[in-house]
Picture (cartoon, rainbow, N blue to C red):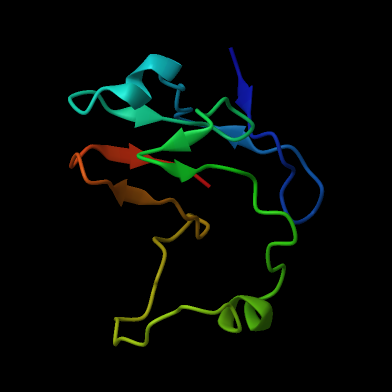
Length: 106
C-alpha cells in the first residue's frame, strides 16, 4: 500500500512516504517508559506535562520570517548538506521532565 504525505510538495504534487511513521496510541503520552509518536494531522493529548499542545496558526512561511521568530539562540553549526538525491526535511525530538523522548516528524 502506498502512503502519501498529507501535504503536497513545492510543486503541488503528492509526496510518497517511503518509510511512513505510525502514530502511537494516545495512552503512550501518559507513560514515561513509552515512546510517543504523532504524525501530521494525527491526534495529540490536550497537554503534555502541564503544557498545552495546540496548532501553531500563522507559522512563518519564508526563511526571512523564520529568522525573525523570537526566542532563537545564536550558535555555530556546520552547513547542512543533504545527501545526493535527498531533499531537506525536518523533525523534532523533545525531552520532557520525565526524560521521555517524543517525536513530531515534519
